[in-house]
Image 1 (cartoon, rainbow, N blue to C red):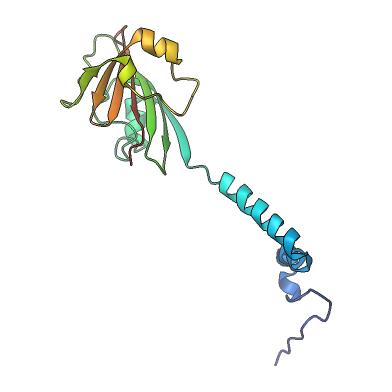
Image 2: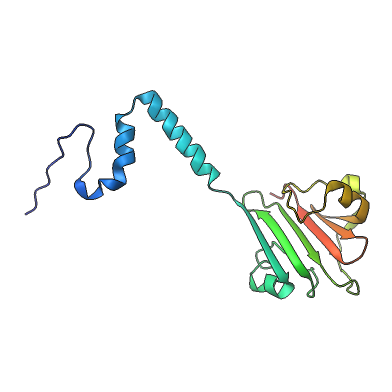
Length: 171
């Protein structure tokens, strides 16, 4: 029969086998209440900063996007041409906001969903992600034609071989 004896040292309430894993708890227990509160708040702030829900992905081809489940998961729309290349996307898992850019041959006709209607540049909200692959606001307004698609937006480069798609406040 094994007898477990409590450690008689002050502020020590754990057994030897878990000693290394509980040093932080022991330290917190011996701190003043105010200092303990500050440390816990700092740790909570740090932990929430580590839980970034914004994810980036890039695919050299549409086949790669399909293989990566980007279409099934809804981050790349199924109307993106099958011969698209340089597909880049970013999305926020919490808000469901996303931004996407892709290239396609100028000879390919981009067929947007039927609910997409032409709108002025002033009628589209900005992308909130600020990725390097996204055009600057000036370039966007000068070189793209815009469509509103039931809460989503499409920008078609005037060259006819690059497009953007984004969702804002999509909850």
